[in-house]
Every structure is written in structure tokens, then in C-alpha cells.
Image 1 (cartoon, rainbow, N blue to C red):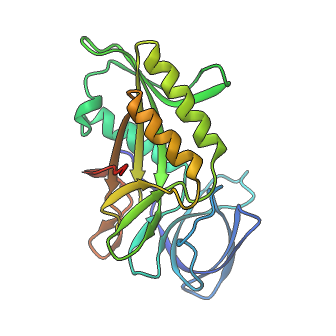
Image 2: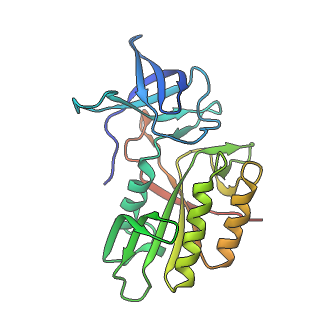
Amino acid sequence: MFATPDLIEGRLIRRYKRFLADIKLADGTEVTAHCPNTGSMLGCQPADARVWLSLSDNPKRKLPYTWELVETSAGVLACVNTARPNHQVRAAIEQERIAGLAGYASIQPEKNYGTEKSRIDLFLSGHDRLPDAWVEVKNVTLCEGEAGIGYFPDAVSTRGQKHLRELMVQVAAGDRGVLVFCVNHTGISEVRPADHIDPVYGKMLREAARAGVELMAWQADLFRAGGPSGSLALVRPLPVILD
């Protein structure tokens, strides 16, 4: 099963230059950690938030710590490491947790495709009944309101718009185009397009759904007894609402 390393708790001092975060560890030591997230991280970087880091033993790394999880102001957990979702979804497919994507003989990551020079997150082939599936994975950590509504994207995403266009082309050619929202936030109960942040993406997402692109949302288990989980396993489907 895919799993993160053991996690180290600390407190967020600040995030800056997108990829850097200063963290105070439990013993008072201050470290600079790599922040593997290119998005706005809206709602996921409150001041003095509890955070959890992984520690690499690779001597060539300039920053051995990586920011993995955060406790939001609502007291719930979110995984901010956007390198994790592809592995989470792949593990769920291999374990046949996602019924709609089970039965494929081969899973190829980062396959080049499309007229816009894209790379698909996961390419599934070799099913005895279903066409090949081009699977795009998106990390969802933006939660707004008391109803637990999750939104994507958390910033204007021209890259995400491009991916929707590419998926529609694959569907038109006879293959499956699948968009999996990997919900790495324990307070989210449904996923919607963030029309208030990127209305173009919202419009294109609805267009893609009408064109036959399949939309799925799966929520990760971020807890274990006594603290945050290192497994990040996808454990439950959530509805994708386009109304």
C-alpha cells in the first residue's frame, strides 16, 4: 500500500516563495521545509497551524523536510503535498477500490499525449471489455462553508483547462477520459467547480461532462489512532455536483 513516511509535528511560521515554509518543531527548533504545492493553498495555511512533515534521508536534498499535512482553522486535516494524489489514486486502482477503473492490465504514469503536449497522470490499458482510460488526477483541499463543500481549483488554472480539452479529445476518439478529484481534506462532503475563483474552468468542466468525460471524487483517510495517518488511502466516494 502507498504510504507516507513517519510524520513529524510542528507549527507553521510562514509559507513564502510558493515552495518554502518555515516550521517550528515541537522541541523549538525552526526548520525550512519544502512546500510541494503550486496552488494558492487557500484555507490551508492559517498562522500557527499544526503541521506534519516528512523527513528524507537523501543527503543530496537541500531541504530534508517536506510539508505533508496541515490542521485547518476548522480543526480538520488536509494533505497539501500535491505529489501524493497520483500515488493515492494509482494505489486505489491497483487495489480495485475504484470499481469504475478496475480490470485494467496495465497502468502507465506520466504518458505523453494530446495536441497540446500534455502528460496524462495515469493511462490505463488492457481491459477485456472497456476502452483505454486516460485518467487525470486533481488534488482538492479547498473547503468553504459549514456544509463541507469542496471546490476545485483554488486559483485560476489554465493548465487544468488544457487538461479538460485533452480529455474531451480522447473521448471523441473512442477512449475513456476520466477526471478523479482526490479529496485530501477530512471536512469535505462533496466537490463542486470553483466558479467564484475560475469561472472558465467551471464552464469547461460542465462541457467536458456533457461530452462524456467521467467525473469521480474520492476522499482520503488522513487519520489514524492518536494522530494523522501515513497511509492516505482513498476510502470513500463523494458526489461531484455541477448544478
